[in-house]
Amino acid sequence: MSGKNLFPLAAFLLIAFSSCHKPDAELMLQFSFSAGGDTLQQDTIRYTNAAGNIFSVTEVQYFVSKVLLTKEDGTQYALSTDNGIHYVDADIPATLRWLLQDDRLPLGKYTQIDFVFGLAPEYNITHYFLNPPENSMSWPEALGGGYHHMKLNGKWGNSPLSSSPIPFAMHLGTGQIYENQQIVSFVDNIFNVSILLSDVILSEEGVNTVRLNMDILQWFQDPFVFDFAQDGTAIMQNQTAMGKLVANGETVFSAHSNH
Image (cartoon, rainbow, N blue to C red; front, side):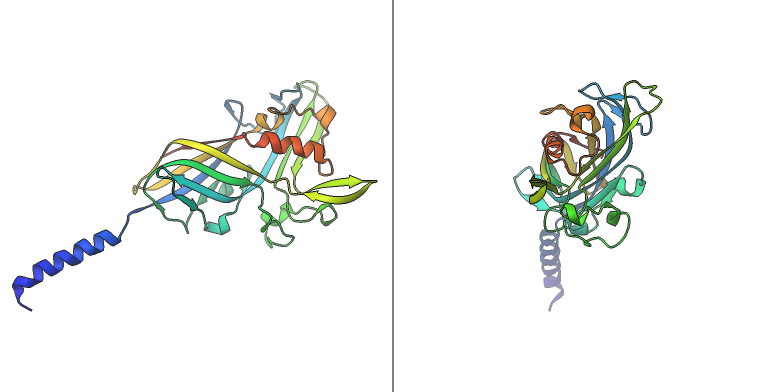
């Protein structure tokens, strides 16, 4: 081949390579907690819910699954890292960041994030998780098996200085329907969360971060006011109470870009 033909060939190969290689973005989801407009402070009785209950939060643990991002052009991307499942624990800092190592997303603006709060049915199977901390979320076999979708634990009293606060355990998992004190059916108690995004633009530079914040107060208000005194403080066998949290939970999250 003559030298005068080498340059056009090299230029063609460069153009062909450039057209095949599409830049992508590295993404991390970051999880946080608030109570109203303030960052959540654990282990102090300082919050008041819509029912007037004064309470503290000692633990928050939950799963998200089947996470889906929607780009401005309507294209949707289902996350595959860790099978699209992530466990969040307010007391384990490593769980508050989820680097999506197996997902390289196209650059550009994203307008929506969707996910299942809790474990989708195909994953909510006893012994799906073999190791801690995830396997510590197991749900009793007699009550439906699988795993807790959430544990939200704390204490409440009649005043911030209550000398004997009462423990509460807002646990979401498989609910039961009873007839004559016998379980006749189950309710999975997962729900879909859909959040519109206004400021998420993924770029090639560094790790892009989207923060998902949970507002603890929202669990106890809108559309249902949840009152510890009336609705209970241990709800694993109380589908009516769990149903209220499921309905309220659809709006506990907000999402923002940190990049």
